[in-house]
Length: 107
Length: 116
Image (cartoon, rainbow over all chains, first blue to last red; front, side, top):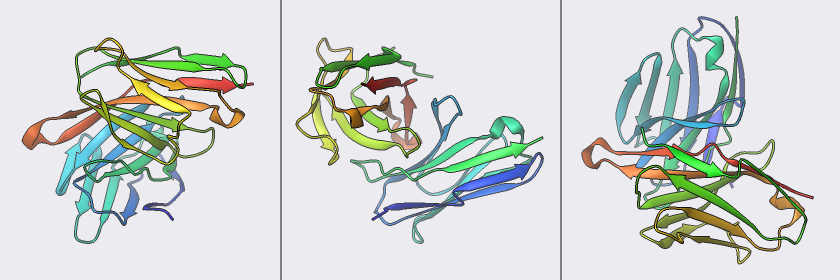
């Protein structure tokens, strides 16, 4: 069973497009992280959310705890945004990794 | 931003051998996590380590695996009698709780383990 579902699994966008990546989870959580995994493999933490919305540059993350759903938005996408984006709910003891969304932004 | 280094960056070993992967945070932290990512698959949680004890482990983390903090700084993942299916990228992460600001993870660059 998958405790975390992300959609879409793969996404190709033109530079400048607005992008949305969705994450639904079934576990009870205290927080949810969004990670970015670069093509070379390195992982960077983008956001930690426990409620509401956070914004960092062109990235916006939202979470609805009642609906067990989070979204990651990228405004004015750029080829350097090409990466795998991973949703990571945290129960307080354990992290559950989403399968990731592979984003390719074409110039 | 806290920095986490991992050594070696790439380890090649023969099946049945033991390997030790190391994680070194720049500053002292209490929470550590190990994850692995088999090529082409999603990242998987292995174990969390808090205050020198295992606090949570996944089904993957069986008796073949062990974690230690041998000198109060380095954090090691030992894999005994490696199998071909242990070939993966192994990531270490530190976890910092900021109180009301929430918490954050910082990942090391990973160790690529190849079992031949």
